[in-house]
Length: 292
Image 1 (cartoon, helix red, strand yellow):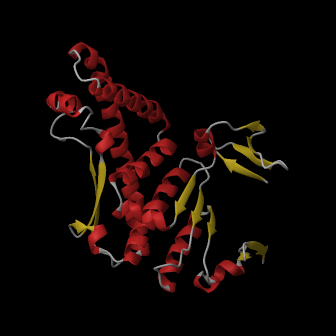
Image 2 (tube, helix red, strand yellow; image 1 turned 135 degrees about the horizontal axis):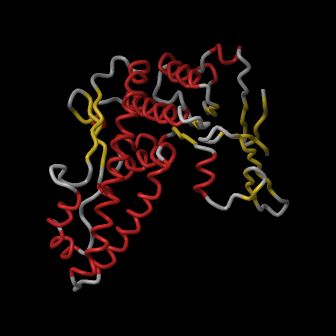
């Protein structure tokens, strides 16, 4: 199977997936074997919307951190090194804390590096969230105009009235007692509220889906603005949505100009004009696909 993707630099490179008779799969990018998941993610950004996407609202904070960090990975390339160094410093500091008795001189270098990299990651996340909001709000107004006043606020993972270095210094004794670093970007979260109340608690399932779709589409538009192709994979789009709301999402997708793969049970739930424009449709019955 062959295809083509446009990278953030605007250049195009061929994607080639080869499968041997014994089942071995090889992925080639620009004719060279791809040996890194990060390289593949860089070349072919995928935005997935499925039943697990609700975790952006109702799941653990780690899900929302992953959403932010996916955006940082693709949009702010210069922050990749800071994230890697932060993770390394966090692992090393926690390793030392688990050892129990240790001198301050052992812990200090990793604490200093953790503070520096943590501040850089936090600033990057804040920038990304601010840029995301600018795109997200008009999308939400388009998809769910009656949803209420939605607010996205970033919680950095420590007392924001002090620097991360100060927070680490204040919490060092407790960290030693617990055996791990208790504050920092690894504890960050996005609070999503509607009219001042938790979106997870106040919105219906259909409204939650529209809010999540707005976040995902905004994320894709930010990346597309950096001259990189985005591929949307959407599973069972009509679920929890009536036909009018489903068509709103479809038209928002269409306006992006990006390629989208959508699964549904009834094709009538998709806009009729899509079929007039030559929409490619595959019917799957008993696990066997056929093109229409």
